[in-house]
Amino acid sequence: MQYPKAFTDALQFVWGEGFLSPGGPEEVAEMLHGIDLSGKRVLDIGSGLGGVDVLLAQAHGAAEVVGVDVEAPLIEEARARVAALGLSDRVRFDLVTPGPLPYPDAAFDVVLSKDALVHIPDKAALFADAFRLLRPGGVLAVSDWLWARGAGESAVVQDWVSRLGLVFTYTTPDEARAAMAAAGFVDLRLEDRRAGLQTANRAEIAYLAGAGRVELARIVGDEMAAARLASAVGRQAALDAGALIPTHLFGRRP
Ligand SMILES: C[S@@+](CC[C@H](N)C(=O)[O-])C[C@H]1O[C@@H](n2cnc3c(N)ncnc32)[C@H](O)[C@@H]1O
Picture 1 (cartoon, rainbow, N blue to C red):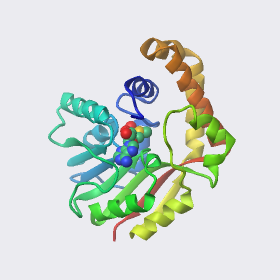
Picture 2: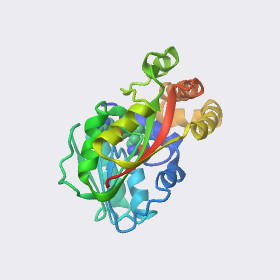
Picture 3: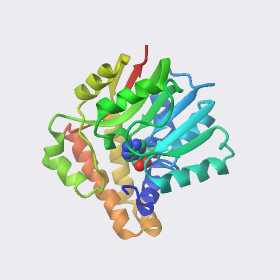
């Protein structure tokens, strides 16, 4: 398990309730810029605690949202979150195993994923499956952590990731674009989000080193609070070195 409870509690403290990735509602709105979800069926790959999925239904008007994840406790917490909000009839979560997803061809209008594909090594298979799951005309909208070539071997990244407890896969923007094209997606668009994350991450470091530190330690203990600060510092180094390239990726099934 890569996302134990003390870790997800700490991530939510920093990034907001239901979120295991940065940016909150504004970032989800950026991912969906120009994409109308009203009345649509949406698949969310790597749904975590379901904060994104609540927004897709509540703020963006999706008719139906299916979130999938590989960690059972996250799925349970996400289900409890939507039940408490009375959204269970529109938002559901399925526990899956890595690999092709158990849904029929053309089952979704939109396939979305926020900061989860970094955990999935076979991008060719992943994008091929997303293509299969979309109806013709359907849209892929992804936020992912992409990397400069050789980033996985760089000292700055190894120093950060080796202490993080997460397994990343190091895909470059060119490799991601090629995998999407090979799957059949058209109208490809990749947007480098590094500048925005650099600014937000600097604020996160200041908060975790200052006012937030005591409060976070009260919730998850000193060790985890210190680890979150160290991780934010490591992430900043990877961003500043140009190794980590947070990216939005879009494509359409013709
Ligand atoms: C950084 S979290 C992001 C969660 C959520 N999208 C968010 O933004 O709050 C990455 C998520 O991807 C999930 N994950 C990892 N490998 C996966 C796979 N092969 N298929 C689906 N989800 C996966 C993890 O369990 C975790 O919940």
